[in-house]
Length: 240
View 1 (spheres, rainbow, N blue to C red):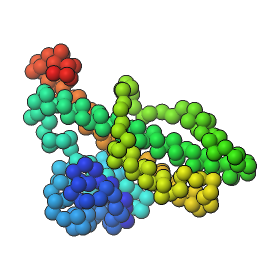
View 2: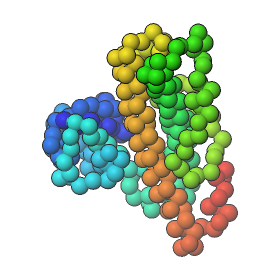
View 3: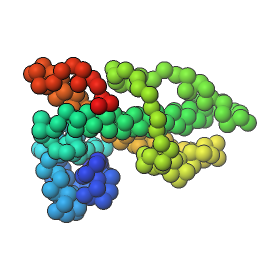
View 4: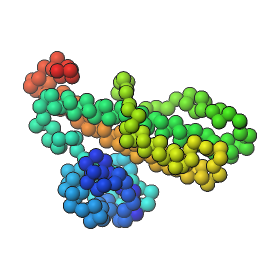
């Protein structure tokens, strides 16, 4: 059994974003998934990239219960981005950058909440008495420097509160009892940490997929500039 993560059109075709699917190899897992999710999913799968634990893999790669197989559709509009117009390239890149902003924001939220939950675990294991103020430790947790994993320059970010990932994280926190960490027993606290960790890992993988697509579009823009099919002003002017 392996955890199958589905994104974009693959998720829409299957009707779910994740599932646990039987199989000893990537190919076997995807074969079961095609039978389970039907012809629409099989058609989408033909154009997708498949990653095992965050890296591209071969169909015969072995999988276990702790492994994650991600199905990543190509850039919106198809994999042949060379056929897109300059305006289409810029529009798609802008849309993907906006989505990456949102995904990165939610990822940081999930990381912060996971840090807080794990800090409560450490407090219990060390025997430190709990404070009456539930906010104690939060400043310390968020003050810890955490690398972003990206060398991209910062962008102005305006994430809507009803983004699907924001809503999913809020639902997860309610169902796992995150809002009342001090009232959870040790098993419930461990379950909360596990759910937050799995969510953060899935969002991180989605973020990585977006980076790959954004880089592909940016590379095509640069290629056209070098080939002389566009000028640098047109390349950089995303408002026209």
